[in-house]
Length: 254
Image (tube, rainbow, N blue to C red; front, side, top):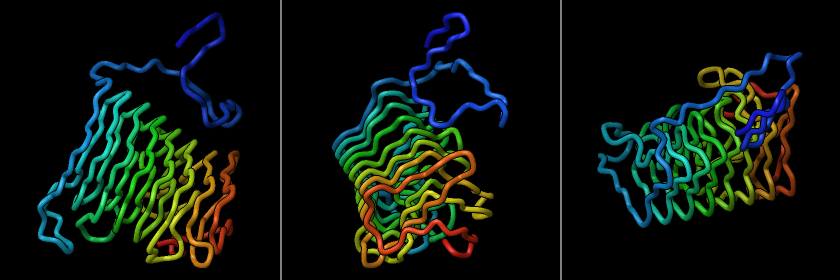
């Protein structure tokens, strides 16, 4: 944003300490050519035609926000997608609220059914009052270390088949605020942890991230919470039967 002598001012938070004893740090000025500003969709329903079951010969993404800033989606419903109801990519300072991403149609396995999916270069986005049903990773960071500062506020996860989580390779500054799980098919449903060799070698999947007043069913649900090296994750005011920080293997959280 500004350079004055040896002082650089930036217009976004830094979620990780810049320590050159660990790794050399660089700052680049982005090329914003082609970025689309102040666009959105409202009151839209997308119902993708499929053969049901494990059919995968149909539209994979319902809505993609790519190369946008200050965008939004409001009061929309996305149904029967293969991977994402809403996927963000090179998307920043955007808001997605009162939307439903429900009932994806695909094989229940990796790279599928990420109902609200923050993909690469997704930063400083707000997901508020949304609803996800029958997916796998309902609210997820899937963009590695290029994804940071995304907030899931007062979102509901219904009948998930996997975990809402920092998903892979050092996502930073995630916040799940008043996240709620209902109609649970499994106990482990929310996590900031080391995914070790799962997927494409997902490793430490979230750093300096927070679970705040999340409810995963205090008589049944499980939260996975671990401290990455040189960083921290927090669970504050959460309701669960178990909050575990024990080291895990890939087979523990499938």
